[in-house]
Image (cartoon, rainbow, N blue to C red; front, side, top):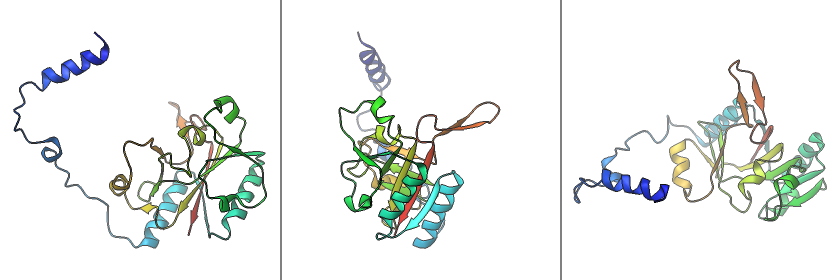
Length: 213
């Protein structure tokens, strides 16, 4: 008997005395909690997102469609990036300015190869103002999860205001739980018992968020 069969067998035994007409789980569990905290205008929600992103030590930029390509190339140049990883569905106009060599995400790319790429540019699925969190879901402009975890520098573009929501419940309304979700609150970091913060442990050391509006 496999471990899976043992676990499922225990679940069946635990549910054996539950009557067939028992209240379904989705109705038995109350979900009357607040969907968001307070009322804000769109501008206030975007400002809160920027404030909380910065509080998590992300670097926040605001720009327009016309200025975005030059901004991205300037950020890559400041990092001295020679190679930048590009998801397959990234809008081409975002990277229309001259810059470092673009490396396209491929299924055959190994972690060792990706480790040689200094930066990655992606879009996002949604951004949460109350928590300063960026969520990726593996969409065409984001690529596979590993391309946003291996490079040391991540530039993430958030379309404002359509991709900004006030709270986690509002974000969950938009997200498909079957997709590979990556929740990012600032650069990857951890701290030891002495509270010495170390960044870049299991993801990018530097997160730059571009609010595109």
